[in-house]
Structure formats: structure tokens, C-alpha cells
Length: 347
Image (tube, rainbow, N blue to C red):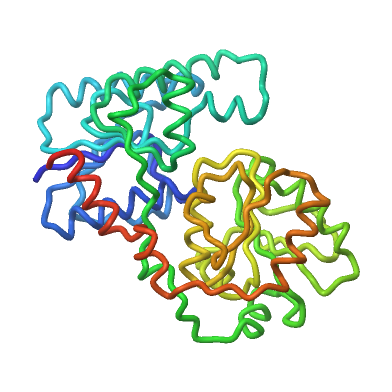
């Protein structure tokens, strides 16, 4: 089968990029011919040599309108090349199937943003066109599926909730070292309970709330480890780890993953942490709350710092029972994800 995977930028930024690499490996493993259509490949990206790359040059295009131009160029490519299956992870229009990792209107609504900038207007238009034109849409959560129905008027029969896949070879509970040893390796106090926050967009992922929570927890044997975008000087009970290439070490070391997001369509870090045996506590604005049950973690109904402080103290005193095969039980393995996607797409 000849497969096209479409994504505007190939980087190492987060969950969506991880999904793209998983899709590449899956199709190659089946013996399919894979082409990636993109505009930019970051330095250090290791793309399998079997993958064909079609690079759309946008260097002379003003940055604000690059998504629109990229979508138009992809239309031209899809008109001239034939694929058995095409899957887009971008706001494009000509593919057979579309991954919907979020909606821009949903994001604006969550932030209570009353005025739309020209960029917001363009992004909403790209969303609308992509949703209207694609036969099969895979929303990363029921929350996002409902946003497409309510905010864009899309027919719900062509939208399927399909949680992002997690590779159990990359994320699993099989830590060789103890939590204390791993904490020491990461520069954390091995004698303190560790809260992990994994984020590249700190305001949206809830860092300001967590800093307020850590003020309230000052003097208690609890520390917050923040992985992702480096932070300036932080309180003594907050440690900035910067970007980590082996994030599962933090999941193994942590006593609790915290994700107090203002808007999080799914939250792949939540599933990754669970796969590594780390319980989680998330906001009700997080799509991954849909996979949680009492033995896996807690959902906090508001973003009130006092309520979060109490919930964290409660969670740190609880015993959770995360099964080793939690990914399989929740339908989150790559094989389960792809089998359902391809069955729905009829290929």
C-alpha cells in the first residue's frame, strides 16, 4: 500500500510529532511504501531511510500565512500523486483521513478569548475546511469530537474518537532502578515526594497554578520537577529539568504526574505516565480524563489552587493500582489504534 503522511513541521516538540514517527514505523513494519509531505525537518530528526520525503519550500512565504500556503501546496501534490491511504496531522484538505489533535475554536473558548486576531480567523477557516472536506476524522478525545460538532457544525457520524497511541516499548513500568536512585540521577531530593509536570507550553499546561500550589506546600517534603521548556529561577521546592530525551525516567521517579491544564485536547503525557506506572492528577479541561478510573488517578473539577493543593495531598497518601497492561486495557497501543483507524477508513 502506498501511504502519504502529512505534517507541516517535523520536529521533536511533543505528542503529535511522536505520533507521526509511530505511524511511519507502523506502516514500514507492514511493508507499505511511505511518503512524508512536510515543509520543515528539524536538525537531529532521525527519519527511517525507507521513508520518502517531499518537502514543500515555504522559506519565502511570510510565517503567518504558511499554514494556508502549505495546505494549498498539499492540494496540488494530492492532485498529481495517487495514494492508497493519506493521513494528515495538519490543517490540510485533500486527505482521506485527518487526525484532529485539537480545535482552535475550542482553545479560544477555553481561554475565554472574546476577540479573534487575523491568525485566529485564518486558523478557524483552515479547521473548518479541513473538517468539511475530510471523509474520516479521528478526534483525540470525545471532548474534541464534541467541539467539532458544537463549534464547527460537523456531522458527528464521520468523526471517530481515537485516543493517541503509546508505544509500550518506549513507555512501560519496567524500571531497573528504584525511585530514590532515579531521583538522584535527575538531581532531585530522593527523600521527597515528587510531582512531575511535563510541558513545552507552561501557561496552557498549568505551571502558574502549580507554582501557587507549591507555595502552599512549602516546608513539606514535596518537590515539583518540571520537564520541558527551561524555567528561570524557581522556588526551592521546584526543580527545572529542561528538555529530557528519556522522559520515562522522570515518570518512573515521580510519585504523581500533575496536569492542571487550562486546555488540553488529550494529554499524551498522561497516558505515558500511566504506562510507566505513575498515577496522575488532571484538570477537567484535559481530554485524557476520559481514560481515567479511580485506580489510575484523580480528576480535579476546577483550577482552584486550594482545591488542587488538597487533591495532591490526598493523592500522595493514596495507593493506586495501575495494571502493567494499562495501555492494552485502554486501547492505547499503536497496533490497536492503527487497526481501528484503518478499519474505519476501509483500507
